[in-house]
Length: 314
Image (cartoon, rainbow, N blue to C red; front, side, top):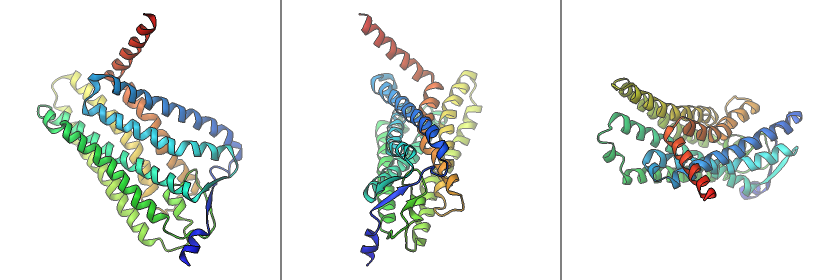
């Protein structure tokens, strides 16, 4: 009987911003520009770090992984979101919704751990500069990157499988822009109390704990920076850390508000805006934050540009 209930819904309807039809066209244009900007910005970072040998150090290799995650995260969400905005109601099959939620959680979870690893890298570099090459050697770097990706895969596998093990027997309208856990869970016609306990615990462990550790790391970093005798050194350290801290605050802040209570009292429209904050803004702003505020990235970009121009001339 449970299997019949489960199969009674074979597709969902994504409502998007159908309550505001007059905004659909404008939002489509804005989101398309954001998507193209995200792809271009992150692709430039990936290419620059791949081609420039001087950037093959943990700090920039972490950034390269972050750009891969952001491009993938956007590719999972944005095309479907643009389809939703271009039509009044968008059908998405049960399997497609499962896949979208799975990869959203995979890349979102991986980004959580990568941002934590990047904070540890900055902590080691600034607070222990002499022993930094030993602390953050190639082996440690690879372990942190692998841990981030494997953790993201584990989170996605457990959570998505659990959500879609619930019976969905109608209604099938998801009042959201994509298949995110909280709005999909609201459609389950079963007791989801245990899952909500898991979701709360998981959010605290996967999102809140790394966020608190990152903040503690930056408190230590701040004190270390203030003790630096060189004003130039302090400015460079502040610039590097400010980039990462801006990205962390934007991503973790909105993700916490979205996932801390899957059935929270936020209105559906508020939930959509909060989801857009980390699904659109973070992947778009990360390349701008890290490249425009980083002199080494800008030098590497100019070097590659001059090399390309020279090759065309000669």
